[in-house]
Length: 350
Ligand code: TXA
Ligand code: MG
Image (cartoon, rainbow, N blue to C red; front, top):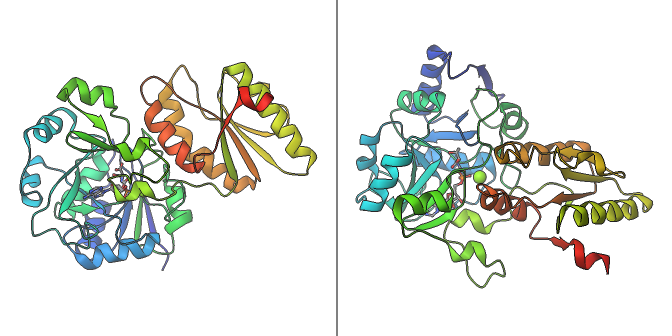
């Protein structure tokens, strides 16, 4: 089976195609669709068989729970038995939008969807195509990112087609997504996965919010609370290292390391920014965006990692991106892609 692909935009919805997609989901099939964060691989969240199909299509372990997407706030009470005050405040402020909340699950949500847990992750996306599809499917769509498990999340329909084109029924192509990193996950008051909605924004809204310790400690002594965060995700095929230091130190260090690798006959890729891209001499250089506009870095991260897979480089060196607002989310994904390999440019020189 090859997935049927239909294209539309949020401004110009193809309601016939959305109805067909909704019917596929109601009948237990799988449809990939755009959201404001990344593309999702949708199945009916209340159908255990559909959730099993999602795990199989992605090659994902079935103890890694799925996010249930809704398109009307009233639907929340049908799938969560209790909504704490803090969650109500966050829903009011950030929904629809790139925020997922963990809540105690109602009986109608099968354990297959929640990876065996008694809690359910819920998100109300702002993307109009996603909203209409969820409504057409009956209100509850389970959707992990629409990539093969372990590959970077898809930010374009072409990425979905590459990974899952043979395994699902339909792909809705809504063009390139807006944000490019997955939603922020909160189990009030703990952030389980950083995203576009930053810790600072959440603190402003709720006061007491903190990062899951399992995200900050990477030596395996503390496990992250979101099962998915323990897997080595977003991994490019090449060996990726992140180089830290001042701008000059980093450029210097990457130039030295890539010249050495080149001498050994290896092909090197560098993840740079518009500000630095012309200063690398011995590599296949991709500019990820501009430090002046940190959204552009988040927007292109997964695309750049996929491009390097296509280019078949052996090694990738990336600058670090501790930008003020989205730095936590960007570095969380980049560090995972690098298996936490960090080179200190200052020490490397000695
Ligand atoms: O932006 C997003 O959230 C995208 C789009 C498609 O909405 N979806 C997404 O789903 O990123 P996925 O499956 O790739 O990531 C879901 C994460 C996993 O790390 C999973 O372990 C965690 O959410 N999760 C799901 N249910 C959970 C629960 N009940 N408790 C703790 N973590 C949970
Ligand atoms: Mg994912």
